Image 1 (cartoon, rainbow, N blue to C red):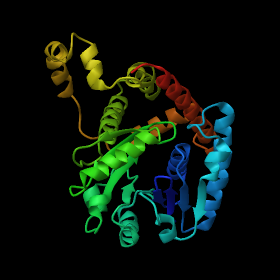
Image 2 (tube, rainbow, N blue to C red):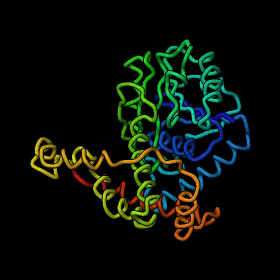
Image 3 (cartoon, rainbow, N blue to C red):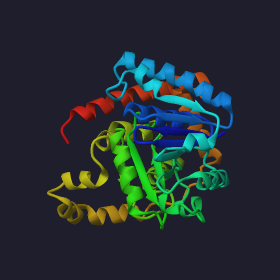
Image 4 (cartoon, one colour):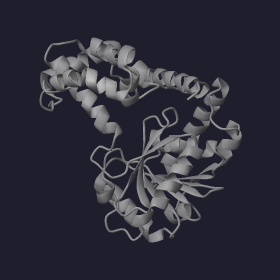
Length: 323
């Protein structure tokens, strides 16, 4: 199943497999900025279901005051349509955003198809969270027009987008994608070269690994570990990053490094090997999480909705604050 948005006035197209959360979020974001959006999926029912879901979600956002953009929900919805042919979906588009599952061969197959029908102006972009552009776009005739634009789940509420170029990606491709992401209200960051996991997941995995080790070694319970982030580090990191935190926690960065550098190196040397993320610790963490949020579909969906509501309110607060 492949989905494509073709967003005009500026001619943006997005492709993906299964019109799921990421794909719907991209469609909503592009429509919020006044772009015409085409959804394509090899399973027509996926497109039909996505359009129904989009209408319900955007109406709810409008009623709650969280709908993005200056257009109303009906105006935005009128910009989004389904499409039954990939060539038709991409025709006239300036940007294609792929959203197929995180499977290298599947993505390569799709980009090979797009490469055959793309003109010399359209940007071919992947939503991949960790697949390297050098593997995704290898051998494509339009490789200079290709890059990864990795959103954070859920993209409609979390604005960060990592722009990761192929070694042969043209600088203009990154510049155009950066401008497009800013136009639809996202916060793009440029990676100057590709690296496994990109920036966000490398940071996230480092936190997850040490969190896992602390639980596995009996230092702290799973619940208390999460509080360290949600009621501690996370409050700061919602507004400033780790480097600015260092800068503010002393008389500037050089002062921080001089004051805390030796202690940081000492602690970092005590970090253990990469966890297996399985076995007794996985069961222990699972049980602890299920006490808070049972793992049936209804409870998980309700908690995700609560999370998204919190993210919406936090996003509004951040938007009102001076930078």
